[in-house]
Image: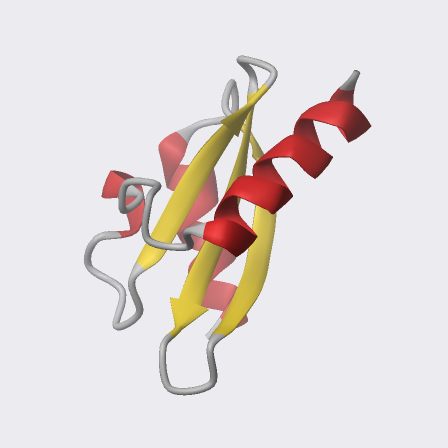
Amino acid sequence: EMSASLVGSEMCIRDSPLSYSPEPILKDFHRDYRSALLMDNFKLIYRYDKERDEIVIADIWYTKRSQQALLRQFKRKL
């Protein structure tokens, strides 16, 4: 079920990468991260590089974890 949800989201993102909303938890980062909900409890977090016409998957996030954990994780990636 997870893989079907992931494939469906990937196709939508590929066709229209700006169609999903910016991820509000990550709004203060220097890149515009967006998220697509997968199966109620997961978010596919990605960014779209317009210059390269490239979609970069940043994370698959379990939404029941704390928002602070997500922020810490992204700070470590920088």
